[in-house]
Image (cartoon, rainbow, N blue to C red; front, top):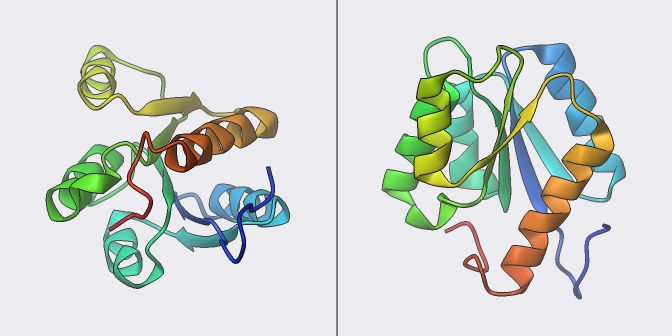
Length: 140
């Protein structure tokens, strides 16, 4: 899905402490026609989100200092409309604690390595939810 709507450029924040993965995902999403901003960890993502105001956040779960679930909680406390705008990634498998977190939040997760078509489908679904009014129109 390319950016749609007059003048609307969808913004995606990529958060992953593995720079090569973040860069690869950012290139792919950029080629889809989205504005994309990578962050190397949760701390940097908290700084970027204030000015970038992404429509969707794609975040690794396991990161040093501020991991994905803590990042989610910090952002959602400050801006509740982000609650359903997260997509998580993990290369470590899904344990019972992560399963409970995903069930509680309703967020989607992709298991690394994932197919870029799968990532594209998830982003398209999030955008359709925004356009269909299932999610607030902006990340604020």
